Amino acid sequence: MSTVIKNGTIVAADRSYEADILIEGETIAAIGVDLKGDTVVDAEGAYVMPGGIDPHTHLEMPFMGTTAAETWESGTAAALSGGTTLVVDFVIPGEAGMLAALDDWEAKASRQASSDYSFHMCVTGWSKNHFDEMEKVVGKGINTFKHFMAYKGALMVNDDEMFASFQRCASLGALPLVHAENGDIVAALQQKYLSEGLTGPEGHAYSRPPEVEGEATNRAIMIADAAGTPVYIVHTSTEQAHEAIRRARQKGMRVYGEPLIQHLTLDESEYFNQDWDYAARRVMSPPFRNKAHQDSLWAGLSAGSLQVVATDHCAFTTDQKRTGLNDFTRIPNGTGGLEDRMPVLWTRGVETGRLTPNEFVAVTSTNIAQILNIYPQKGAILPGSDADLVVWDPKLGKTIAAATQKSIIDYNVFEGVEVRGLPRYTLSRGELVWQHGKNDAPRPGRGKHVARKPFAAASKALSVWKEITAPRAVTRSAQHMPIGV
Ligand code: URP
Ligand code: ZN
Ligand code: ZN
Ligand code: ZN
Image (cartoon, rainbow, N blue to C red; front, side):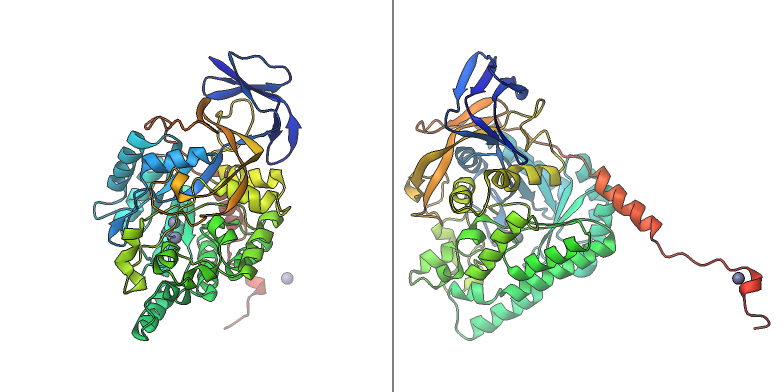
Protein backbone atom coordinates (compact mmCIF):
# COMPACT_ATOMS: atom_id res chain seq x y z
CA MET A 1 0.00 0.00 0.00
CA SER A 2 1.32 3.42 -0.93
CA THR A 3 0.03 6.89 -0.15
CA VAL A 4 0.74 10.14 -1.90
CA ILE A 5 0.32 13.56 -0.30
CA LYS A 6 -0.58 15.95 -3.11
CA ASN A 7 -0.79 19.69 -3.78
CA GLY A 8 0.83 20.87 -0.57
CA THR A 9 3.79 23.09 0.22
CA ILE A 10 6.51 21.14 2.00
CA VAL A 11 7.89 23.17 4.89
CA ALA A 12 11.21 21.93 6.21
CA ALA A 13 13.54 23.65 8.66
CA ASP A 14 15.74 24.86 5.81
CA ARG A 15 13.28 25.71 3.00
CA SER A 16 9.73 25.59 1.65
CA TYR A 17 8.83 24.16 -1.75
CA GLU A 18 5.95 22.60 -3.64
CA ALA A 19 6.10 18.85 -4.17
CA ASP A 20 4.20 15.60 -3.64
CA ILE A 21 5.35 13.02 -1.11
CA LEU A 22 5.13 9.30 -1.86
CA ILE A 23 4.92 7.03 1.18
CA GLU A 24 5.56 3.31 0.90
CA GLY A 25 4.96 1.34 4.07
CA GLU A 26 6.21 3.38 7.01
CA THR A 27 8.70 5.61 5.25
CA ILE A 28 8.98 8.35 2.64
CA ALA A 29 9.86 6.75 -0.70
CA ALA A 30 10.04 9.79 -2.97
CA ILE A 31 9.48 13.54 -3.15
CA GLY A 32 8.65 15.05 -6.53
CA VAL A 33 5.99 16.18 -8.97
CA ASP A 34 2.98 14.17 -10.12
CA LEU A 35 3.71 11.16 -7.94
CA LYS A 36 1.12 8.35 -7.94
CA GLY A 37 0.00 6.20 -5.01
CA ASP A 38 -2.83 3.84 -4.01
CA THR A 39 -4.44 6.49 -1.84
CA VAL A 40 -4.26 10.27 -2.01
CA VAL A 41 -4.09 12.69 0.93
CA ASP A 42 -5.04 16.18 -0.19
CA ALA A 43 -2.83 19.01 1.01
CA GLU A 44 -4.24 21.77 -1.21
CA GLY A 45 -3.77 25.10 0.56
CA ALA A 46 -1.82 23.45 3.38
CA TYR A 47 1.74 23.04 4.57
CA VAL A 48 3.26 19.58 4.90
CA MET A 49 5.65 19.50 7.85
CA PRO A 50 7.59 16.87 9.80
CA GLY A 51 5.50 15.53 12.69
CA GLY A 52 6.09 17.41 15.92
CA ILE A 53 8.41 16.00 18.56
CA ASP A 54 7.69 16.84 22.19
CA PRO A 55 10.89 15.98 24.06
CA HIS A 56 9.49 16.68 27.51
CA THR A 57 6.50 14.75 28.88
CA HIS A 58 5.59 13.04 32.16
CA LEU A 59 2.73 10.65 31.37
CA GLU A 60 1.48 8.75 34.45
CA MET A 61 4.44 10.14 36.39
CA PRO A 62 4.52 9.23 40.09
CA PHE A 63 5.26 12.60 41.69
CA MET A 64 4.59 14.50 44.94
CA GLY A 65 2.59 11.67 46.50
CA THR A 66 0.34 11.09 43.51
CA THR A 67 0.52 10.06 39.85
CA ALA A 68 -0.01 12.40 36.89
CA ALA A 69 -3.52 11.69 35.61
CA GLU A 70 -2.71 11.87 31.91
CA THR A 71 -2.24 8.31 30.73
CA TRP A 72 -0.09 7.06 27.89
CA GLU A 73 -3.29 6.34 26.00
CA SER A 74 -4.92 9.75 26.42
CA GLY A 75 -1.66 11.69 26.24
CA THR A 76 -0.42 10.22 22.97
CA ALA A 77 -3.88 10.51 21.36
CA ALA A 78 -3.88 14.17 22.41
CA ALA A 79 -0.41 14.57 20.92
CA LEU A 80 -1.44 13.20 17.52
CA SER A 81 -4.53 15.41 17.36
CA GLY A 82 -2.22 18.42 17.77
CA GLY A 83 0.35 17.29 15.19
CA THR A 84 2.90 15.73 17.54
CA THR A 85 3.98 12.25 16.43
CA LEU A 86 6.75 11.50 18.95
CA VAL A 87 6.88 12.09 22.70
CA VAL A 88 9.97 11.66 24.84
CA ASP A 89 9.09 10.85 28.44
CA PHE A 90 11.19 10.88 31.61
CA VAL A 91 11.78 7.57 33.39
CA ILE A 92 12.07 8.12 37.17
CA PRO A 93 13.96 5.32 38.93
CA GLY A 94 12.54 4.06 42.23
CA GLU A 95 14.26 1.91 44.84
CA ALA A 96 14.78 -0.88 42.29
CA GLY A 97 16.93 1.31 40.04
CA MET A 98 17.00 2.53 36.47
CA LEU A 99 16.50 -0.71 34.55
CA ALA A 100 13.48 -1.78 36.59
CA ALA A 101 11.92 1.65 36.11
CA LEU A 102 12.59 1.48 32.39
CA ASP A 103 10.73 -1.86 32.23
CA ASP A 104 7.79 -0.19 33.99
CA TRP A 105 7.70 2.72 31.58
CA GLU A 106 8.11 0.48 28.54
CA ALA A 107 5.21 -1.75 29.73
CA LYS A 108 2.86 1.22 30.13
CA ALA A 109 3.91 2.89 26.89
CA SER A 110 3.90 -0.19 24.67
CA ARG A 111 0.37 -1.17 25.71
CA GLN A 112 -1.16 2.28 25.37
CA ALA A 113 0.78 4.62 23.11
CA SER A 114 -0.69 5.56 19.76
CA SER A 115 2.19 7.88 18.87
CA ASP A 116 5.82 6.81 18.82
CA TYR A 117 7.72 7.33 22.05
CA SER A 118 11.23 7.44 23.41
CA PHE A 119 12.71 7.86 26.91
CA HIS A 120 15.10 9.98 28.95
CA MET A 121 16.48 8.43 32.16
CA CYS A 122 16.59 10.48 35.37
CA VAL A 123 19.62 10.40 37.66
CA THR A 124 18.27 11.05 41.16
CA GLY A 125 21.28 10.04 43.24
CA TRP A 126 24.81 8.76 42.83
CA SER A 127 26.50 5.44 43.58
CA LYS A 128 28.46 2.68 41.84
CA ASN A 129 25.11 1.22 40.87
CA HIS A 130 24.13 4.43 39.07
CA PHE A 131 27.49 4.42 37.30
CA ASP A 132 27.04 0.80 36.18
CA GLU A 133 23.37 1.07 35.22
CA MET A 134 23.94 4.10 33.01
CA GLU A 135 25.90 2.04 30.50
CA LYS A 136 23.10 -0.55 30.33
CA VAL A 137 20.54 2.22 29.90
CA VAL A 138 22.52 3.57 26.93
CA GLY A 139 22.51 0.03 25.53
CA LYS A 140 18.73 0.14 25.62
CA GLY A 141 18.53 3.12 23.29
CA ILE A 142 18.57 6.04 25.74
CA ASN A 143 21.19 8.74 25.15
CA THR A 144 19.94 11.38 27.59
CA PHE A 145 20.10 11.58 31.40
CA LYS A 146 18.08 14.15 33.32
CA HIS A 147 19.20 15.80 36.56
CA PHE A 148 16.97 17.77 38.92
CA MET A 149 18.70 20.64 40.75
CA ALA A 150 15.36 21.28 42.53
CA TYR A 151 12.83 19.17 44.50
CA LYS A 152 15.05 18.97 47.58
CA GLY A 153 14.56 15.80 49.59
CA ALA A 154 13.01 14.05 46.58
CA LEU A 155 14.54 14.06 43.09
CA MET A 156 17.28 16.67 43.67
CA VAL A 157 20.97 15.92 43.11
CA ASN A 158 23.89 17.98 44.42
CA ASP A 159 26.80 19.43 42.45
CA ASP A 160 29.19 16.54 43.19
CA GLU A 161 26.59 14.02 42.07
CA MET A 162 25.87 15.99 38.92
CA PHE A 163 29.57 16.33 38.15
CA ALA A 164 30.07 12.56 38.52
CA SER A 165 27.05 11.80 36.38
CA PHE A 166 28.01 14.36 33.70
CA GLN A 167 31.48 12.78 33.47
CA ARG A 168 29.82 9.41 33.06
CA CYS A 169 27.61 10.87 30.31
CA ALA A 170 30.70 12.23 28.57
CA SER A 171 32.36 8.82 28.61
CA LEU A 172 29.21 7.08 27.33
CA GLY A 173 28.45 9.65 24.63
CA ALA A 174 25.20 10.60 26.35
CA LEU A 175 23.74 14.08 26.81
CA PRO A 176 22.92 15.38 30.31
CA LEU A 177 19.65 17.31 30.70
CA VAL A 178 19.05 19.61 33.65
CA HIS A 179 16.09 21.03 35.53
CA ALA A 180 17.91 24.16 36.65
CA GLU A 181 16.58 25.80 39.81
CA ASN A 182 18.55 26.24 43.04
CA GLY A 183 16.69 23.68 45.17
CA ASP A 184 18.21 24.80 48.49
CA ILE A 185 17.06 28.38 48.00
CA VAL A 186 13.61 27.28 46.79
CA ALA A 187 13.18 25.10 49.90
CA ALA A 188 14.21 27.96 52.18
CA LEU A 189 11.91 30.47 50.46
CA GLN A 190 9.01 28.01 50.60
CA GLN A 191 9.42 27.72 54.38
CA LYS A 192 9.75 31.49 54.76
CA TYR A 193 6.51 32.24 52.90
CA LEU A 194 4.58 29.42 54.57
CA SER A 195 5.69 30.65 58.01
CA GLU A 196 4.47 34.15 57.10
CA GLY A 197 1.03 32.71 56.32
CA LEU A 198 1.44 32.95 52.55
CA THR A 199 0.00 29.52 51.74
CA GLY A 200 -1.77 30.03 48.38
CA PRO A 201 -0.54 29.21 44.84
CA GLU A 202 1.05 32.69 44.55
CA GLY A 203 3.56 31.44 47.14
CA HIS A 204 4.76 28.95 44.51
CA ALA A 205 5.76 31.81 42.19
CA TYR A 206 7.33 33.91 44.98
CA SER A 207 9.47 31.00 46.16
CA ARG A 208 10.99 30.42 42.70
CA PRO A 209 12.26 33.83 41.52
CA PRO A 210 14.06 34.15 38.17
CA GLU A 211 17.52 34.47 39.80
CA VAL A 212 17.12 30.99 41.31
CA GLU A 213 16.84 29.62 37.79
CA GLY A 214 19.59 31.81 36.34
CA GLU A 215 22.08 30.77 39.02
CA ALA A 216 21.36 27.08 38.59
CA THR A 217 21.58 27.32 34.81
CA ASN A 218 25.02 28.96 35.10
CA ARG A 219 26.11 26.28 37.54
CA ALA A 220 24.89 23.40 35.37
CA ILE A 221 26.74 24.87 32.38
CA MET A 222 29.94 25.29 34.39
CA ILE A 223 29.71 21.71 35.64
CA ALA A 224 29.13 20.44 32.09
CA ASP A 225 32.15 22.39 30.88
CA ALA A 226 34.30 20.90 33.63
CA ALA A 227 33.03 17.42 32.79
CA GLY A 228 33.61 17.93 29.08
CA THR A 229 30.06 17.37 27.90
CA PRO A 230 27.37 19.32 26.05
CA VAL A 231 24.30 20.06 28.20
CA TYR A 232 20.59 20.64 27.56
CA ILE A 233 18.60 22.89 29.90
CA VAL A 234 14.94 21.88 30.09
CA HIS A 235 12.09 24.35 30.58
CA THR A 236 14.17 27.52 30.24
CA SER A 237 11.80 30.22 31.46
CA THR A 238 13.82 33.34 32.27
CA GLU A 239 16.10 35.91 30.67
CA GLN A 240 18.70 35.01 33.34
CA ALA A 241 18.78 31.36 32.23
CA HIS A 242 18.66 32.34 28.56
CA GLU A 243 21.54 34.75 29.13
CA ALA A 244 23.65 31.98 30.67
CA ILE A 245 22.93 29.75 27.68
CA ARG A 246 23.67 32.54 25.19
CA ARG A 247 26.96 33.36 26.88
CA ALA A 248 28.05 29.72 26.91
CA ARG A 249 27.20 29.29 23.24
CA GLN A 250 29.20 32.41 22.37
CA LYS A 251 32.15 30.77 24.11
CA GLY A 252 31.75 27.80 21.77
CA MET A 253 30.02 25.46 24.20
CA ARG A 254 27.32 23.08 23.02
CA VAL A 255 24.52 24.19 25.32
CA TYR A 256 20.85 23.89 24.38
CA GLY A 257 17.77 25.60 25.84
CA GLU A 258 14.15 24.47 25.75
CA PRO A 259 11.36 27.00 26.43
CA LEU A 260 7.88 25.60 27.00
CA ILE A 261 4.80 26.79 25.13
CA GLN A 262 3.32 27.68 28.53
CA HIS A 263 6.21 30.01 29.43
CA LEU A 264 6.07 31.65 26.01
CA THR A 265 2.40 32.54 26.31
CA LEU A 266 1.14 32.53 29.93
CA ASP A 267 2.38 34.91 32.61
CA GLU A 268 2.73 35.10 36.39
CA SER A 269 -0.52 37.02 36.87
CA GLU A 270 -2.23 33.61 36.59
CA TYR A 271 -1.12 32.83 40.16
CA PHE A 272 -2.90 35.89 41.55
CA ASN A 273 -6.30 34.82 40.26
CA GLN A 274 -9.05 35.05 42.93
CA ASP A 275 -10.12 31.49 42.18
CA TRP A 276 -7.83 29.07 44.10
CA ASP A 277 -8.44 26.20 41.66
CA TYR A 278 -7.63 28.43 38.69
CA ALA A 279 -4.28 29.45 40.19
CA ALA A 280 -3.37 25.99 41.51
CA ARG A 281 -4.00 24.37 38.13
CA ARG A 282 -1.19 26.55 36.78
CA VAL A 283 1.36 25.59 39.42
CA MET A 284 4.39 24.17 37.70
CA SER A 285 8.15 24.55 38.03
CA PRO A 286 9.56 26.91 36.98
CA PRO A 287 6.46 29.11 37.37
CA PHE A 288 5.08 31.33 34.62
CA ARG A 289 7.03 34.61 34.30
CA ASN A 290 6.37 38.20 33.23
CA LYS A 291 6.35 39.60 29.70
CA ALA A 292 10.02 40.63 29.68
CA HIS A 293 11.02 36.99 30.16
CA GLN A 294 8.56 35.88 27.50
CA ASP A 295 10.04 38.37 25.01
CA SER A 296 13.51 37.02 25.77
CA LEU A 297 12.39 33.44 25.06
CA TRP A 298 10.74 34.39 21.77
CA ALA A 299 13.87 36.27 20.75
CA GLY A 300 15.99 33.25 21.58
CA LEU A 301 13.94 31.03 19.31
CA SER A 302 14.35 33.25 16.27
CA ALA A 303 17.98 34.10 17.08
CA GLY A 304 18.88 30.43 17.56
CA SER A 305 20.14 30.75 21.14
CA LEU A 306 17.15 28.60 22.21
CA GLN A 307 16.40 25.60 20.04
CA VAL A 308 13.31 23.68 21.11
CA VAL A 309 9.72 24.30 22.23
CA ALA A 310 8.34 21.56 24.51
CA THR A 311 5.41 21.18 26.93
CA ASP A 312 6.65 19.38 30.07
CA HIS A 313 3.16 17.82 29.88
CA CYS A 314 2.53 16.63 33.45
CA ALA A 315 -1.21 16.83 33.95
CA PHE A 316 -2.94 16.56 37.32
CA THR A 317 -6.68 16.88 37.92
CA THR A 318 -8.19 19.67 40.01
CA ASP A 319 -8.78 17.15 42.80
CA GLN A 320 -5.10 16.26 42.78
CA LYS A 321 -4.14 19.95 42.88
CA ARG A 322 -6.36 20.40 45.97
CA THR A 323 -3.91 18.28 48.00
CA GLY A 324 -2.14 21.60 48.51
CA LEU A 325 -5.19 23.58 49.59
CA ASN A 326 -3.53 24.92 52.75
CA ASP A 327 0.08 24.59 51.64
CA PHE A 328 1.26 25.52 48.14
CA THR A 329 4.31 23.27 48.48
CA ARG A 330 1.96 20.29 48.31
CA ILE A 331 0.23 21.27 45.07
CA PRO A 332 1.45 18.71 42.51
CA ASN A 333 3.70 20.58 40.06
CA GLY A 334 2.79 20.32 36.42
CA THR A 335 0.57 21.51 33.58
CA GLY A 336 -0.60 20.10 30.25
CA GLY A 337 -0.07 21.23 26.68
CA LEU A 338 0.61 18.23 24.43
CA GLU A 339 -2.26 18.81 22.00
CA ASP A 340 -1.96 22.60 22.10
CA ARG A 341 1.79 23.15 21.68
CA MET A 342 1.84 23.35 17.87
CA PRO A 343 -1.42 25.30 17.32
CA VAL A 344 -0.58 27.82 20.08
CA LEU A 345 3.00 28.24 18.84
CA TRP A 346 1.78 28.71 15.26
CA THR A 347 -0.84 31.25 16.36
CA ARG A 348 1.38 33.24 18.71
CA GLY A 349 4.58 32.70 16.75
CA VAL A 350 4.02 32.39 13.00
CA GLU A 351 0.76 34.38 12.76
CA THR A 352 2.41 37.30 14.60
CA GLY A 353 5.62 37.21 12.58
CA ARG A 354 7.80 36.22 15.53
CA LEU A 355 8.72 32.96 13.74
CA THR A 356 8.87 31.91 10.12
CA PRO A 357 7.15 28.63 9.17
CA ASN A 358 10.65 27.13 8.74
CA GLU A 359 11.68 28.27 12.24
CA PHE A 360 8.45 26.74 13.51
CA VAL A 361 9.48 23.38 12.02
CA ALA A 362 12.98 23.77 13.43
CA VAL A 363 11.82 24.37 17.01
CA THR A 364 8.96 21.85 17.04
CA SER A 365 10.75 18.97 15.32
CA THR A 366 14.01 19.19 13.38
CA ASN A 367 16.30 20.73 16.02
CA ILE A 368 15.34 18.25 18.72
CA ALA A 369 15.64 15.32 16.29
CA GLN A 370 19.23 16.43 15.68
CA ILE A 371 19.94 17.05 19.37
CA LEU A 372 18.56 13.60 20.28
CA ASN A 373 20.48 11.90 17.45
CA ILE A 374 17.42 10.56 15.62
CA TYR A 375 17.68 12.80 12.57
CA PRO A 376 16.76 12.17 9.73
CA GLN A 377 14.69 9.15 10.82
CA LYS A 378 12.56 11.75 12.63
CA GLY A 379 12.31 15.52 12.16
CA ALA A 380 12.86 15.46 8.40
CA ILE A 381 11.00 15.13 5.12
CA LEU A 382 13.53 13.16 3.12
CA PRO A 383 13.48 9.86 1.24
CA GLY A 384 14.02 7.14 3.86
CA SER A 385 12.69 9.20 6.78
CA ASP A 386 9.78 7.83 8.80
CA ALA A 387 6.56 9.14 7.28
CA ASP A 388 5.65 11.17 10.39
CA LEU A 389 3.91 14.09 8.73
CA VAL A 390 1.43 16.83 9.49
CA VAL A 391 -0.73 18.40 6.83
CA TRP A 392 -1.05 21.78 8.49
CA ASP A 393 -4.01 23.91 7.53
CA PRO A 394 -3.38 27.57 8.37
CA LYS A 395 -7.07 28.39 7.84
CA LEU A 396 -8.49 25.92 10.38
CA GLY A 397 -9.14 27.36 13.79
CA LYS A 398 -10.76 26.60 17.13
CA THR A 399 -11.16 27.93 20.63
CA ILE A 400 -9.26 25.75 23.09
CA ALA A 401 -11.61 24.27 25.68
CA ALA A 402 -11.37 21.50 28.26
CA ALA A 403 -14.82 20.38 27.13
CA THR A 404 -13.52 19.34 23.71
CA GLN A 405 -9.91 18.37 24.43
CA LYS A 406 -8.39 14.90 24.12
CA SER A 407 -6.54 15.21 27.42
CA ILE A 408 -8.47 13.47 30.22
CA ILE A 409 -7.98 16.14 32.85
CA ASP A 410 -10.82 18.50 33.77
CA TYR A 411 -9.33 21.84 32.68
CA ASN A 412 -6.92 23.35 30.18
CA VAL A 413 -4.44 26.14 30.99
CA PHE A 414 -5.07 27.54 27.48
CA GLU A 415 -8.86 27.60 27.97
CA GLY A 416 -10.39 30.27 25.71
CA VAL A 417 -7.32 30.79 23.54
CA GLU A 418 -8.31 31.08 19.89
CA VAL A 419 -5.89 29.28 17.65
CA ARG A 420 -5.49 29.55 13.90
CA GLY A 421 -3.54 26.75 12.26
CA LEU A 422 -4.38 23.10 13.02
CA PRO A 423 -3.53 19.69 11.60
CA ARG A 424 -5.85 18.72 8.77
CA TYR A 425 -4.21 15.29 8.88
CA THR A 426 -1.55 13.68 11.04
CA LEU A 427 0.35 10.66 9.73
CA SER A 428 2.51 8.45 11.91
CA ARG A 429 4.86 6.11 10.01
CA GLY A 430 2.57 6.39 7.01
CA GLU A 431 -0.66 5.67 8.88
CA LEU A 432 -3.38 8.31 8.97
CA VAL A 433 -3.91 8.73 12.72
CA TRP A 434 -5.80 12.03 12.88
CA GLN A 435 -8.22 13.78 10.54
CA HIS A 436 -9.73 17.14 11.35
CA GLY A 437 -13.52 16.91 11.60
CA LYS A 438 -13.54 13.19 12.42
CA ASN A 439 -13.06 12.14 15.96
CA ASP A 440 -11.56 8.70 15.38
CA ALA A 441 -9.26 7.67 18.20
CA PRO A 442 -5.96 6.18 17.06
CA ARG A 443 -5.26 2.60 18.09
CA PRO A 444 -3.56 2.28 21.51
CA GLY A 445 -0.44 0.15 21.29
CA ARG A 446 0.38 1.09 17.71
CA GLY A 447 3.15 3.45 18.86
CA LYS A 448 6.72 2.18 18.66
CA HIS A 449 9.71 2.79 20.87
CA VAL A 450 12.35 4.93 19.18
CA ALA A 451 15.85 3.90 20.25
CA ARG A 452 18.59 6.51 20.18
CA LYS A 453 22.30 5.85 19.73
CA PRO A 454 25.03 7.60 21.73
CA PHE A 455 26.52 10.79 20.27
CA ALA A 456 29.76 9.71 18.72
CA ALA A 457 30.49 13.08 17.11
CA ALA A 458 30.07 15.59 19.93
CA SER A 459 31.82 13.52 22.58
CA LYS A 460 34.65 12.65 20.21
CA ALA A 461 35.10 16.31 19.27
CA LEU A 462 35.15 17.34 22.92
CA SER A 463 37.56 14.62 23.99
CA VAL A 464 39.94 15.29 21.07
CA TRP A 465 39.93 19.00 21.88
CA LYS A 466 40.40 18.31 25.60
CA GLU A 467 43.35 16.06 24.81
CA ILE A 468 44.95 18.63 22.49
CA THR A 469 44.54 21.41 25.04
CA ALA A 470 45.28 19.36 28.19
CA PRO A 471 47.88 20.75 30.63
CA ARG A 472 51.30 19.36 29.80
CA ALA A 473 54.57 19.47 31.70
CA VAL A 474 57.37 21.40 29.93
CA THR A 475 60.39 19.14 29.29
CA ARG A 476 63.57 21.15 30.01
CA SER A 477 67.05 20.00 29.16
CA ALA A 478 69.79 20.32 31.76
CA GLN A 479 71.26 23.43 30.12
CA HIS A 480 68.05 25.37 30.85
CA MET A 481 67.92 24.40 34.49
CA PRO A 482 69.45 26.44 37.31
CA ILE A 483 72.80 25.04 38.35
CA GLY A 484 73.69 23.93 41.85
CA VAL A 485 70.25 24.42 43.48
O1 URP B 1 6.26 21.33 37.34
C1 URP B 1 6.78 20.51 36.61
N1 URP B 1 7.60 20.93 35.67
N2 URP B 1 6.49 19.18 36.77
C2 URP B 1 7.09 18.11 36.12
C3 URP B 1 8.41 17.76 36.69
C4 URP B 1 9.49 18.66 36.17
O2 URP B 1 10.06 19.43 36.93
O3 URP B 1 9.79 18.65 34.99
ZN1 ZN C 1 11.58 20.00 35.64
ZN1 ZN D 1 9.45 18.00 33.33
ZN1 ZN E 1 67.78 28.06 25.21
